[in-house]
Length: 353
Image 1 (tube, rainbow, N blue to C red):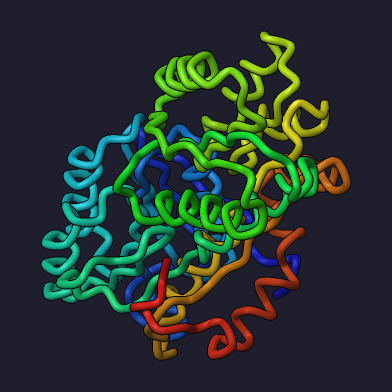
Image 2: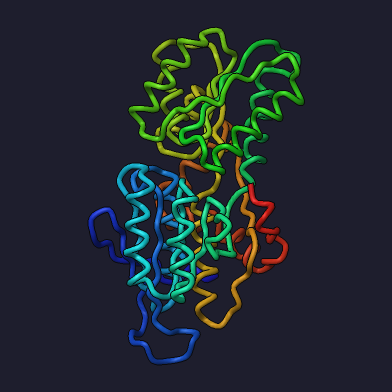
């Protein structure tokens, strides 16, 4: 990919981000440059995980000709609100929509209706349900990410340590989050039999609710060795509590919110797990664009990577997060490699976790 590709876009709407990639307009021309009306729906437009995926998608659209992209999502995690936005979006984004959500069952019927009407739908970050008619999913192996966090915890605790570790999940019942928690629990129990894992407990995705939930859990289990969350508010709220209490326990979570990265840099968080949301958003949107321009869209689970962020690499991640352009520059070679060999990254959809 050339670095002189288009990087500009427009922003429009309330709680909806729109982008038009520059280039000749009009519906005529070959399939390789026809005007595309595309969309993206996310679970929470205000949290880092969703905005990073949206940034990746917008960069992919900006690097292509004649793409109008509209990104929508509620200001707080609200499945029914997102469902309504998605149902409205597919009426205008007639060439395709990338769908990220935290409540897969309620999107089964709307997604199936969109596909039946001829709108391509790519699932992002949360695998599609049976009956949704969506056959391409771009996302992590979240169980593996949970294992990675557990392994990083044991590097700090030691496998012979005895005690308890408390695990929290913002939205129990959300497959990707539950898989992360299960990965943590299974890995700790397998490698550190003297550690008892408590939870997972509900910690909520709203930052203020999340802070209150973790404060209660830390107070209720005051002797725990570590408190581990699987969402992005978990990371910075746990760090804030530890800092306020002067705690000697370990805390860590997921995602790369600016506050989280600063806490990693300060050493309050011993790490955070980065699901590399920008990368996922870029790849999902690029596959959708290519699928509208003569290239057959793959089917199955396009597995993407995750990254441990700790004191050794936090500065490079902070630099990456400064702008969508910086994020693209960071991922450019990886994007080219992954899209250049799609088969190497594809797994059966049924295996997604």
